[in-house]
Length: 153
Image (cartoon, rainbow, N blue to C red; front, side, top):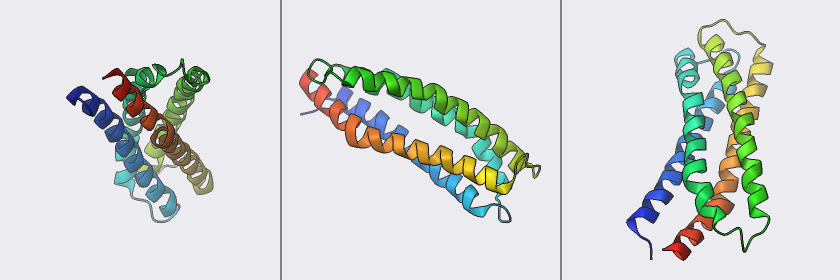
């Protein structure tokens, strides 16, 4: 049985995942349109939202997901190392998001600072990384979070 607080925590994580996946879909659309079929308005919109979306996702993970999962570290000894690795990945993800912000602005303004191939590579590298991260959380950490919340409740 779950409580309203448990449901709220699970909902926050699920909503964060949905926002990240929607961002990935939009970034893939930009990458697929390069070089000749670029939606400049979408590029400018994504430039505005990429960093806040990733920062918000990290905040949900740090405030909700990781603490819940870490309550199981006594029974899963490598869990603390996994959480620590994910925390360090946040720094890399944010740095990549900032670089992507700059690239999307230049593409959106019609003044790309890199070739279409380089921009496509950058976009794909970012959204594939985010998709892998979300998949790991959905497949491994979210079920552990549910278990931890049930155990605590």
